[in-house]
Length: 121
Image (cartoon, rainbow, N blue to C red; front, side):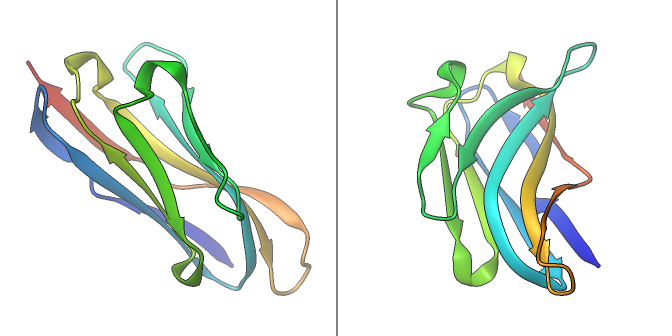
């Protein structure tokens, strides 16, 4: 089995920073593109950032210049550094990744359980 586990969420004041981590574990053969999404209460889930296995990173327009996505392929882990956080960015942040497992070696879509980020105003 393959699992994605996020960590690093919490409570932070407006203007503060948090670093989220997303680790793939289990019978992993390869981890391809990794994504961070967020879902605020009453809103649709939205894409925040993505990074390919080769390190090509993209961030959504609302977070450009404040958020940085990175990854450590040796650890099968992606990170989301979030700076200058705003209260409206309070949401559950989810990790998503295309992962090939050892048995089938075919990319499948996996989601983490989510981690809560609360930005107090």
